[in-house]
Length: 263
Figure 1 (spheres, rainbow, N blue to C red):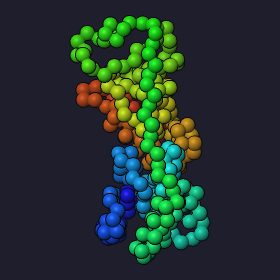
Figure 2 (figure 1 turned 90 degrees about the vertical axis):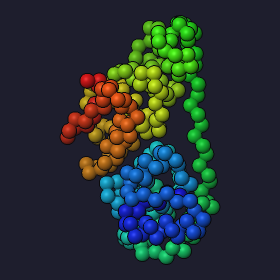
Figure 3 (figure 1 turned 180 degrees about the vertical axis):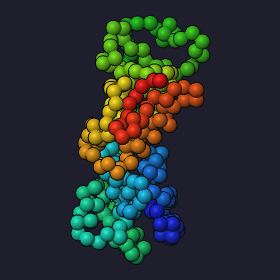
Figure 4 (figure 1 turned 30 degrees about the vertical axis):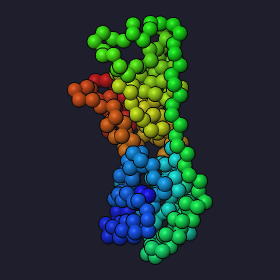
């Protein structure tokens, strides 16, 4: 279970109670940490507080649902108006508990969630990259000085431009059909949203994309000017792309958006 609650007293008390009930609990203090933890190791169920700094519980829920993640979500909220409850359910939450709550009610709602929601199937591995019939053999294509056993980066078929099967710019190569990407010879391990964001930036290399355009293309709607969702995912991508001594590839254009280029 992943528990996200910014109130330390509530978080610690609920973590202890859930642990005693038999759950293996990972507790975090805000939405940014919650998203990072979900992407590291997907839990069986999430318990999210609504009012958290940075990215709140409803935004976390919306982002996960936009990624296709159907992990059950129980919302903790101090908001008791019907409109607030409807907003939580519309964000993709499966159930909610109003603060102050009895911990036994939390247990009961979690049991009900886990009974009626089927287990999330494992993500299937990416299909293998088809071999290229034309062109040099693997050994002939291996750059000089590359040790045997180094990971292979599929060569782009001769005469196929960057708009074909492979998308290339700024030292990056991407195969959208196989959902694989590399910086140089290093293959990148990307989540679904990270891959789609990188593909959008790569296909528009050198072009500044504004926040609204990126939100519309990746999530289908704009989270609003105060949202930090996009900045969080750009941060994830930068950590996976950046290399010591190598130029940064994703640049922030303040007040506008982001651009991918190699300076």
